[in-house]
Amino acid sequence: MAKQTKKAQSLDLDMTGLANYYKGYSFNNEIMMIRVTDLNKELIDKAASGLISNSYRLDTLTVLLAMEGHLDVSVDYNRYTIPEKSLLLISPINAITGADLSTGGRFFLLLIKRELLDRLSNSGGPKPLPTKDLSDIFQRPHFEMDENTYSRISASFENLYHYLKDTRKEIREYLVIASLSIVMMELFSLISDRENVSLQAKHVSRKKELMTKFVFLLREYGEKEHNPVFYADKLFISVQYLSLILKEETGKTASQLISQHIATRARNMLRRPGATIKETAEKLNFSDQSSFGKFFKKETGLSPKKYIESL
Image (tube, rainbow, N blue to C red):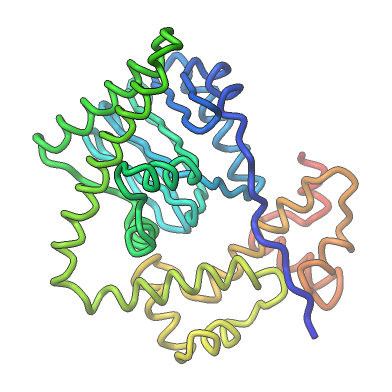
């Protein structure tokens, strides 16, 4: 029986420390908000690349609001260009696989821990994003907005940022929670509006659902299971249909996405202090070190040995 593979490591963020470092603001280690400009862009880029290379998952709702400039972001193997006056919502089940902020841009980065969203719901505030809405975000994280919607959402962000800076301890908590509730209601309205439009395209949702399930399976079994047949069987569809769906959604076949996932995991493993090529080959279920070396060079252009030497 094959051993179960480890899932992506969860990262318990020190929001207070990160907010101080990146010149932002936090509240009770449950909310972090940063206004990203060229003044702190380099630090943000460095942090993002570190998270991506180590395959961390954040148990937060992450929101990026582009006010000026644009974002180039890869979420679960899909590349998005986020223009100004639009928004990126990243749910706890998403994985960011690449990101770059344009020079001269202005962005808001907001992280909200899931526990706080749940408490807001239980206290009579706006309900947290239901499972169906998290699934929708997972499949389509980019939200375009008309001028009126952008004005409302950007104003709610500015309001929350203002009260996170507030130094009046006796009323700060009330002001922060109240302004966060407004942000969440605006986001919920944005998602609901798009969901209503999406009812006309139900035939597309089935393909999105299958792609979502494939990504989950790849995260769980990807280190051990390299054959697309395994994933197609789990989804009760043919390999040909699985590759067709993935090709339509990502531009890549099942085999290509599996290879990309394995290569990413291999690079992460080889970066670890004391890592060996033999041990990495075994963990990734290759028959021997030689076959792993051929695969790695084909995917990355370097032999495992050369890759370790380049670090």
